Length: 265
Image (cartoon, rainbow, N blue to C red; front, top):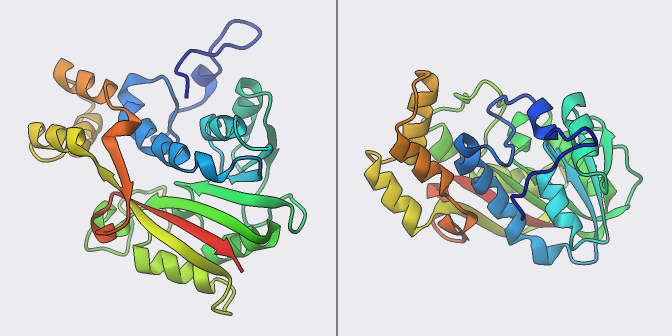
């Protein structure tokens, strides 16, 4: 993905008009770079799965992921609930079709897409089974649902109540599998082809050691304290790339994020 700045007709960067909530990553902001790259790596991973296909991104946020996928897909439709995100995506990525709508009532016909992408969104939804049922409805037979979400075991250890106030229900790998397989009560909604985990690669593990065990905690502690970042931390965060993350099977319970590839039955 290109990091070159985009501007609207008045020469402004549309990202400057999109409020930062801590829950929506925006490209091109150095302090957000770790989280942006951690999300972006999932889009890179699935690029080969969208070639020539009709894609729905359910919960498209800023729109950078749909923009990346649109370079290989036959078509990309975005749905997001937030008005400001929808307006931003339309302005910044005019080649995308963007609808404002509720993810448990998707504004698409039955069996109209080949792939549904839902990255870092399901943990925000109150009715997760209804959303999975909607994904099943809009997918063609044999279509795929690609889903990522923070791993509850590492994101909110030892608690079923999310620490993050924006999250309604976080999932571990077993819970996510059960949701996908049995969201409609039939036990056959989706087949989970792969349950993968997003992990720190070697360079990020080195940075974890450098920052007292966790570069994530180093960022969060300073953000919560509203303290200036040391220049070394700022440089380390700004230098993170998608190559610094690993998406792999095995040891999923120790992963940062879960990444599921499921097929509609």
